[in-house]
Image (cartoon, rainbow, N blue to C red; front, side, top):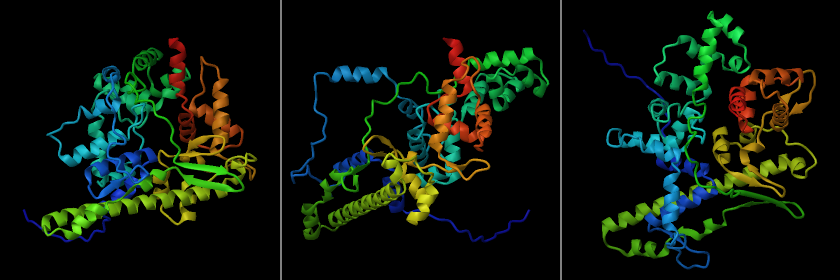
Length: 435
């Protein structure tokens, strides 16, 4: 055996801590940003917080004790939050600190249903980790209880449950992976022919599938009631005015007292400590200001482009995040982070910022463009009027749209249906039969 050494030149982008922090701050909504600044204020002596009148506000947001505390504690204990339950299963002391950090972040990103649909590449950037590390952590998180948690879709969720029950029926896994919609439509004969098994075997599999849990988070309490706090407010007097709902940010600044102490002290270690803390505050305030600038530019772009919609004299025009990124001369991922979890308030309603974006769908044989909301409205109307004993599958809805000259994929139909909060045909039918 011989050993050979070879030098390889490889280009790899490494994000600095400041860049990662900038991305994290851009992703935060106003409530999360205020919580982040409050936490930093309590830990960093160089960050000063006033109540708007110049008075120190160290205890302005502190929770005051109450005779009702016992009652509230009891209520919290009775409602187990899914994310806290998942965190309690992490192998502290076995996994290294970085793995625990990544897993904790992924748990925070899980959907209330128990599914996980965030792109692995985006998670890698936000966690400052490699795609391989993210995939490895996700695979380990999928082994946690409840079974099926962290699945990407219904099929994967059900397959994990089947494997955990150690049921050795290849046809069962095949039906779950490829024929759930046929099963929901009652096409027993079709499945029997395609898989070359008897209808009795198909019915046996259908009975087993009906005992599985399509929503792994079912039975867990949700988080406390959250009130919508708009991040951007749009109002009109003579012309449209855009306001970022973050006036409280002005209450945070670098502390003059400790700056003077840093300049006057002769203690080198103390001076270095203050310099590090001051530098961190400057980076944070710079990143916060950059976030404000990005949101304002994005809001101005939306208001200019969707003026007819805001004036209530037209529909929402199709515009993708990539279109917005091109106009603002930034990367599309910047727009994706900027809209994440944020709300925009108009005179008549408050909506998620991401709902202002949609791809254009051109009707066959015409130049007429439709936006996502119009397609969602059609899907919603059809499902409301469907035969509840035989609900429309995503494939059927796709075919109905095709008949209207609207060419979109079955995957896109599923995405629109889920955005409307409507369950799949299998779950809708199952819910009907269980009443």
